Length: 287
Image (cartoon, rainbow, N blue to C red):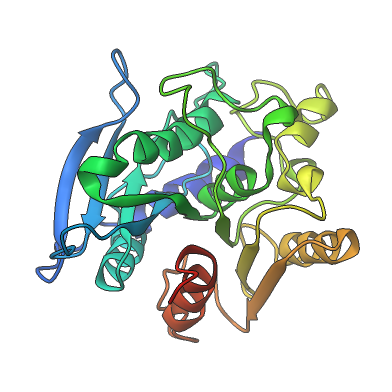
């Protein structure tokens, strides 16, 4: 019973995220292997129709939601994000990552997978014409939590995987957190740990983005709706307060009446201009 809300929210996200039709004004490379031998999780690449010879473009890792137990890289929200990025001169990489189940905890391997995606982009920068010095991350719900962790954690936090592509850095230049969990202990118990927050408070703290806020943290944009019934908006409000207190670079946009699991185009407000201006500022410095 302690995982009931967790399971129900994950089911809702999966059902609500039916894959939309592929766009025709960008290029898609589906089913890219990025985690190495023995791993079945894949990625989809969203690319501009053409990149001029000799030009480098920024890239963004896209991390799906699903309560850490469900979701998929090509759900409607991820397609919306990836298409938006590709239409505006970015390469998007929407990833699957290891999913938890009761009796199969996945922390911190799920974060390792997300960081490996950043490394994969750098390892393939020449082939894809990526600017390896300008890589960002974006994700919703559980993906928002993982995006924040990728954005805020640094090598001395001990959360960088050894490999694959261990010769490339995991750090990103900025990140977007869409209604993610800032403090895991204040959400509810998660099967990705295999223990409750009462049994392992330090584990929940280590997986909480709010733990890693520093003055020199990479810039982060937080998006959250006031009608969110899965992750209360207070999570993002407390996150923003901690970022402000530490002197970090951040933006927060609270969207009145927006529920959980919106894309960049909820009916309440088109968020594409806000997100693109944020990414352009930190990933296209010469624009």
